[in-house]
Length: 155
Image 1 (cartoon, rainbow, N blue to C red):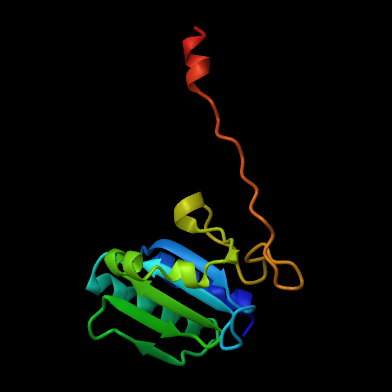
Image 2 (cartoon, one colour; image 1 turned 90 degrees about the vertical axis):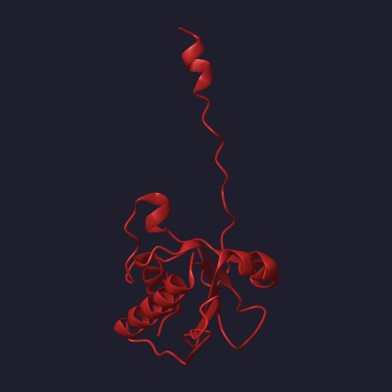
């Protein structure tokens, strides 16, 4: 399965159950075991389990395979191994403690998320991120903040 299609299926599954702070990282330069690490937060044991279930369903619907799932019995940290992508779903306290972004996060993949932009998300036939042909991520462009207070005081 194409990595872009796989990561879109994973993110769609996470968004469907309202995962918080979804981050996707390109890890192809760090390990040959997988190409992406996805980290997301769930607010309770019940939500982390539901997020893992939703990811499994979306990946299977897209034609992907699930290698294994770990941690569902407790639900504080659930790992879903999708082959070329590994999904970590953690509760906020554990996520802060283990700080997986520090380990895997030097090459973030930018995606359009439905909960951040109001955009329903790209489909598998459209570009999923800002990678070039070599798998490199284009640098983020930071836009200056708008100044609205000065306009109001002018009147």
